[in-house]
Amino acid sequence: MKQLRISFVCLFVLVSLVACGSSNEEGKVNQEGESDTANKQEISDETRVYKGPQGEVEIPANPKRVVIADQDYVGYALALGVTPIATTGWIFETPYFKDQLQDTKKVGDKTSINMEEVIALDPDLIVTYSEDKNEELSKIAPTVLIPYATYGYRDMLTEFGKILNKEEETKDYFTAFDKKIEEKETELDDVIKNDEKVVILELAEKEMYLFGESYGRGGEIIYNELGLNAPEKVTEVTKEEGWASISLEAVPEYLEEADHIFMGVRETENGDTEERKSDVTSLTIWENLPAVKDGNVYEYEVNNMYFTDPIALEHQLDFIVDSLKSE
Image (cartoon, rainbow, N blue to C red; front, side):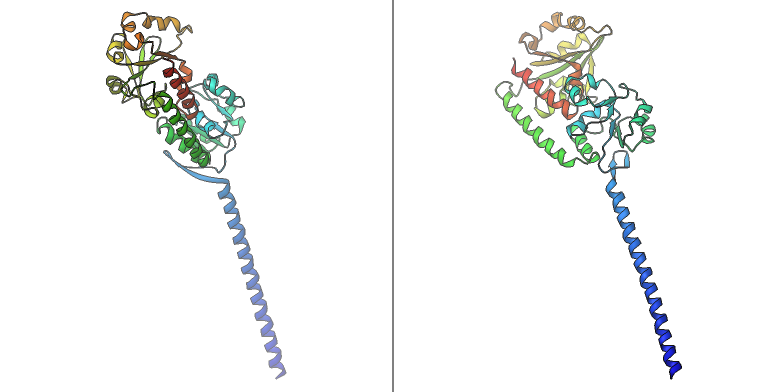
């Protein structure tokens, strides 16, 4: 009996030890499991996946050091309260961008970028529209590629809201901008009749261009937001590309029906614009245009009307409405 009691006690102790061991091991697994989950959550909080037109890219959840590799996209970041640490091009010379880009480094011109300078800036996110630069930029930091003209400016700002984790700011921006559009439309109610036609003309050194609703120069504001119209022939010729080149002889054909003309003059090789402007405006075919006779020609600075981002469009909206009200 004594031996049986001892054997029972030993068996009880052995079972208890095994149970404790199993319990401890299970606790260890659970603890490690919780730790792994926490680590995975931490990683998830630090990065996220953006699904864009070129596929999925893992990017920072809240990017802090953003390089906009192409100047045309800078205004989208600025509109959402994000100042890029670097960009390229001549955007720094545009009056309404100057103050906002004082802390932004220029790392290239319109068609090139200095990769060494970008590396030195240690960005955590890069945005570009250049497929040629994308691979090299992607080696520096997570890079989002959105080919140029993939989206209109509203959809593009929506995408930037996703990229920069500023979706609420995007909604707020559109609310404020749409309100401003309504106010400007009201200002024009007593100035512009519904059937009046508006043309955008730009003089280059040896060519002349018409612009439609999708290639800058205020077309997005004039035709899409304010709902004004171009002569039918101008709409037809600019529909496919957003712009069209015309000859001097074709000026009456396209501008005869225009009640208002917005005209820009690009600098020539010697930096002169007045001589080029005079080449056209001194001609009888120009002087006989109805818009010219009525004094409804408004000259714009090309740099100020080039961009199509929200910051640029706000300034263009003010300029366009003020010009039309000045007649």
